[in-house]
Image (cartoon, rainbow, N blue to C red; front, top):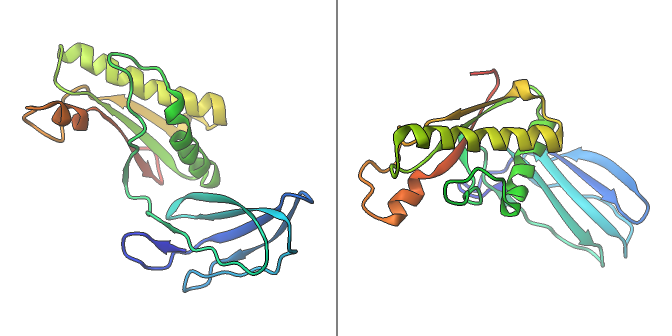
Length: 195
């Protein structure tokens, strides 16, 4: 298990669930070099779960057919996260099915780390009136918060939602649709205490 950027090993806990028997094999810590091994019964279906403080939980289904090696890499969580799947329809704040997988990753991470808080920041491009943009970005941030609370029972006190409209662009001069798309975003900032 390695950091996909640096190649360095990551720390964490590995669990394997025997899906055919419905039992969890005793979890193990990743070794210092990021490796792990288990003695498992052949010809069975398993669920591999790897979790740690530096990255989103990884889950992978596999069928054991002889000796096998699983190599996983992932990006560590930085202070600010942006999911490319979180693109809302124009002038709307509805959570789309394409967003569900990434929002589940975030929810799983918050469930695994109950001491963490997330700040959701909504941003728009500069098209339209600033007050309308601010309201739309707030509605989108609120929709994500509501989705996490309603679907994953995340405590609402652990989530802040703020809409900035077009006041914090990544690209100052929006000359193309690509520039505007970059500025239309939702960012997640994870911290130990409420901001």
